[in-house]
Image 1: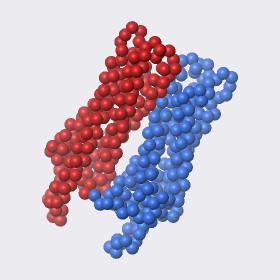
Image 2 (image 1 turned 180 degrees about the horizontal axis):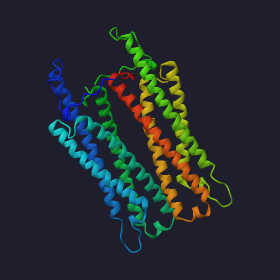
Image 3 (image 1 turned 60 degrees about the horizontal axis):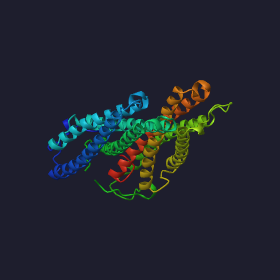
Length: 194
Length: 194
């Protein structure tokens, strides 16, 4: 395994090797740009779903004696996880736009690829566990009287949880792509995979 | 990106390129063997934890009017997920032992690396969602009267769920390693990462 040679902020250094042709810096950069655009689209989708999920849960009906989301630990966990993922996705989207527009990563390249993959993995697992716990709680509420008394609350929590699953799906895809980029970096010392 | 060149059952083909020295086939094979041994250890740990988790849940106390695990959908999901992961880990351990002893993968190499990574990912997510749902259910039971009536049932389910989390942890590590092997294969056409 060759040891990684981190480039400052991941800018391609054309003077590094005289044998590296200009071909590399155009074709590889073009491919990397398309790859990053795909990641950006996935992050945008994940952001939208998790934001929508938080809002849906926060906006559960306030009528009469209907229960609220903060009465249940599990639903608090769902709201928190979706809010964290939405915030993280927003930050990563800015980093992605920065990288696509300037051709350089926001942090030094070695930090950026590990940061992206590590956080994608952790937040994907976080969001999945929140959604799974939420599903279990929603099923329990259906078996009790809560859903007959206040049906709209149950419908809204179901929708919020489903949106959380959708967000997890796209975050999972993103984590696969950032994992690919990380292994490229470990093997070749560069996130360019050509 | 170079296109993968699948080798039949992943046996190193020394005649493929006259420029590839014998050095490759000894050092790389030695490294790969250590890498596969690490995967085998992780799989064994994951297998032990998930088997223990299933057994703990199945053996919850049968005294008097104590509830049983099959009275709750969520706990059935926990048992099923852990049993599936234990079976899968057992199969993968045999495949791993086969690969270490014979130097060739059980299935053709391209199939093996995708099979391993795909299943590791899916089963890691499955096990995490089962454990998270189980945790939510266990917390709900504590809030109700179930745990005061039959405390040993609650303690046993807690232990079973904790063992499920431990199994997930090692399956997650395995999935990172098999992901690394997959990207090596995609980039270099071989699971050898030298």
